[in-house]
Image (spheres, helix red, strand yellow):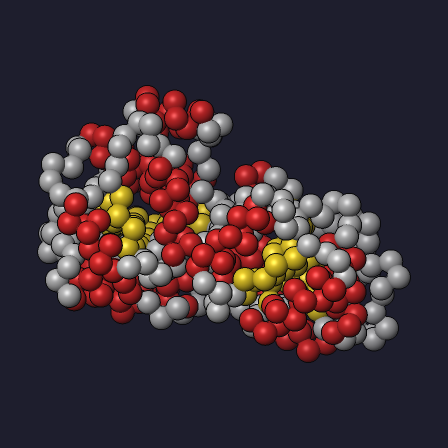
Length: 401
């Protein structure tokens, strides 16, 4: 299938071709026709599978077919964080040469007064985080009376952050009938399935690359570590490998992220850290440098890394093994994007074994263990070693239902 088969207007097809986007991803193939037909959609697809274009293209087609006549927005796109909101805005603005859209960004970290002015001046699309959107609605400073198209993006992240009630309250301010789509990387954890069913009881369901499926070009490896110092040495060894062009290192807590970044800098490695205590401006500046290749390693917590647009990460390193399988899936999805090869490295101390077992249960398979030359663990482990230490194991795509 190509984008030509999805009933999009020629200008959209030409703009996609200019961006070297000729073949829709699986989630785009399945959701775009449903959204173009006016259906409510619940889509579950892995990080990096093209969800943003899956809901942006039908919206652009709708606005080209039926341009907004008044000042009130006809589309509301809800995102859990400012980073994801700005990423969505970037995708929409990549089509500015075709259709001039007025986009209002309603997120924290910016002046509410300025955002109210955006709305008063008129807009076609509102991209918002639930908390700030609800704040303006409750103060009668926003009007959703013309909204016909609603997207709830990264629903699992919203629920992890406790935003479910805010989303429901925002939607209660829309008094007319509207089409809704909800996108999530997983239906596991934090009641995503219940949340989705409550909001979209009759939605068409799409599940692609979900739950325990990965891009086939991502290899996953476990290195066992005796202690913290051993883990640091393993991390350094991975980062200094010739094939490691850029690394995103995940930590479970901000204190650990600071500690890891300090260690890497002490080893003369180019590294910066981002976590929730840093301002939005600082986080954007550091990720911009990382994206440009001026920083080789970005150390992050899951909260700070949500929604970052980092298309060329060669290695994801789980310095801390995450507590849940769905978080692991999000992390691994940061590498191997757009058909590029990727590597997911897990550094596992003895006290990480329970988390590792939980992840393996979630994804339905054991992760291969390898040894780094000169850095083999001294402690014995009941974890089985990979039969081939020299070749990473590739996770194949499972058959789709």
